[in-house]
Length: 153
Image 1 (cartoon, one colour):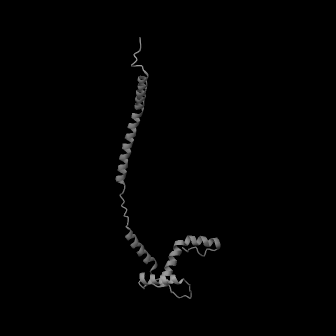
Image 2: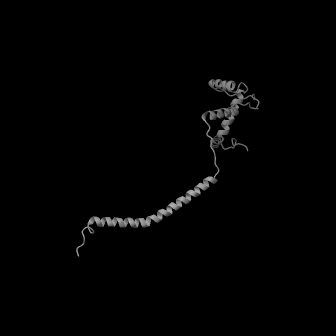
Image 3: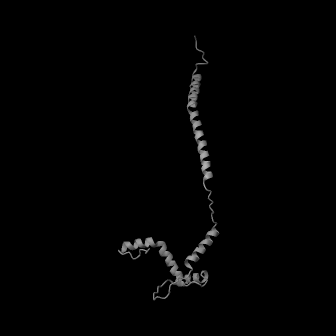
């Protein structure tokens, strides 16, 4: 018997092999894909439930004007208040003329002449020491062996 050339030529054999490979691949991959889709659906359901259970938190982002106003209010509360300390204890400190002029204007205009230069400088120094206490103490300890600058609790 002579084989039919239509069924057994090279192209037909190659197409047959490719179809067989695709069938095997489909048999292996389709169940995996179905399991994956099922897991994805279940996880989405769980995420939706978790999101509904979570408390909704609104974050209000202040605009620049609000931030600036708050910053100015904080500045006034921090620095432009009178210190309840006697100002003359025989201790004088010299400062640059331009700083003295600048501080005088700040106290006069922003502090509305209700705050003394002494109080303003005292508040600025207090803030400076509060802010940089750890750095100052560390640098002090490197040069001196006492605990003079360690804040008392």
